[in-house]
Image (cartoon, rainbow, N blue to C red; front, side):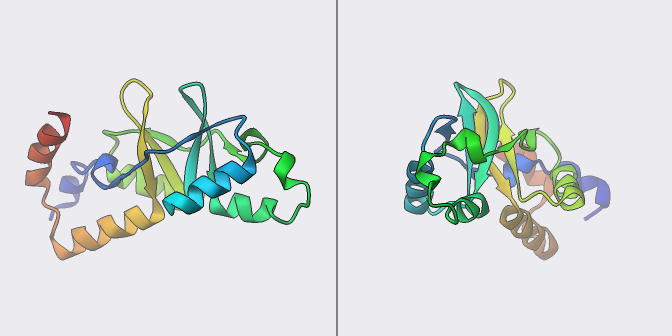
Length: 150
């Protein structure tokens, strides 16, 4: 596969759907319960419909050291200004930025700023494996995008 062909692969192709998010005022205990129930390690934080932060499992582990952690909200522990990308952003660009800046996840949004999913380092590794094995062919991407947008 030619290196230019990789630019045709979008981050959305490998984004994990995100059915859950929390509002800034959500309690830490509720967030921890939700993440455990869903088996996720990252959850976006919204203010209304705007993506304003992200909470990772690591953030919750750090909070568990405090006896008063039940008094904190999502806004208190979230990482502000998460790395947000549009669904059409090239996978190579997102993976490069995450690696360069040591970012564990990217929040993926549609053209209207609505949350679509989260692209994690695990998703990046899955993409790498498929690309190296030749399982993902750029000539199939246009057809897949048409199917997803229908």
